[in-house]
Length: 566
Image (cartoon, rainbow, N blue to C red; front, side, top):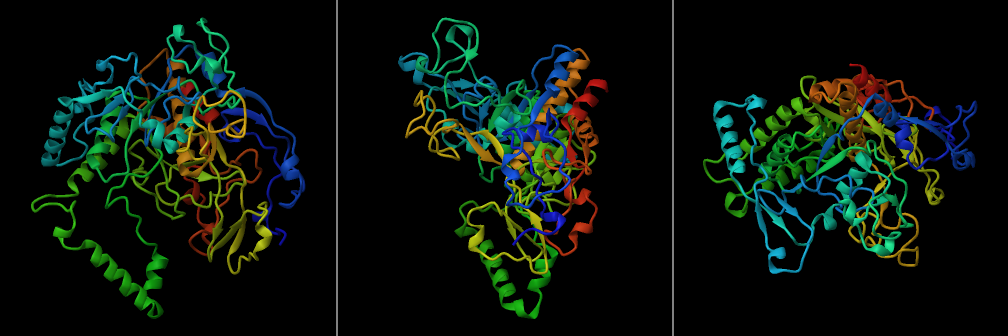
């Protein structure tokens, strides 16, 4: 079926592998004028548009304002590949911490010699000097404030470990590696040992003995740029365990390190605040006579899940308040956000409510809840939206099949195998653009590519350019990571224009980002302005656009200019 409505008219755009930087205004790319007549999705113009012309960047504007040190971005996620060529020099290895394998923090060091002592764990006081008095009492009761003070005192006196073992970041860090590339990835270069930077085996490079960086000869690498390739990343590794204390430690460690930005590109598993409530229309369906059996089943399942305490090993003991630590964590996140902007993903369930902790975003804190939009100007098919959403950034798309809308990838070779009809709903144009970013090399990466340094040339086992180093990515995780990079640009611009002045606090950065966003913008290289869609209700697209996009699409150039002139 050929598309008919305005919602189904895709823009014939040339593909640029870092198109998201142009969509955010980080690079100035000329994709050509909007066509007078937009072709159908099957038109070859979709694939054969001219390449864009790249001119100025916001990085140039910051450099022209004066010398400035890199911003420091704390990424609270599942880890970052420590030796990815586009990330290795961007990670602050000496300040990163792993909170998953040791309660008080761990860090992996390179094995420098083969003596027994090289393989022994060494003690490290990661939280020495932590003082949260400047953050106030977070709005906690006296008892809970005393409880938090005891936790802080425990961490201040705690001992973590330095290990000369296998780095766990090389095993399970695909999500964090992808987000890290979008924040601060840089084109890789050769750094020889005598320059003070580690290098992989010499067969990848051209001749040792130089202190200068030279082009990397690894044919699998791309000239890749994150939103702010001049900033540094603190890798704060956390797990998916329902462990509030672990996340309290993560935010307090980021505060101790005095970072410029905190990025949380996933949800935190608070057993109460992390649960998305059923929609009203679903509740209404369960209350119908025809749904009485299903409603009764749901009620019995919920009752069974509570269960007797003796059958649940992790059940709270008598006299214990299981929500106390989670309540303290909530206050810690809000309190820290007022000093340091906390950039959060809005969630990928397509609901008109946000996941936790993005749902904590409010006018009086520095929590930035980020949704995702596509190059076609619509909310990404999976992106959460609704009250509390701060702004949106570009990402990929997903197909949607529900009673309110149909969104199908009509460029797919399999689209002809099915009969798709929107029925009483509306049909929206699917975007085929995704975010290209860094991948965890090896079998644990998204694309299961070969491990790093495995081959100098493409072969059957090493599939050419990008083999194992890059992946297509998206979600509100990718959108949040991009906004985290823009927040780093804002902090750097502020310091450049004010001779290294103290960094902006979280609320100030959030206000700059919101003021630099607009609901009337289009997502370059597309031509359609941000347009609401019907996801969970009929006629939902008549609601104010801010319900779907918050303040709108972020413009990094405007945000940086505001920081330079503020």
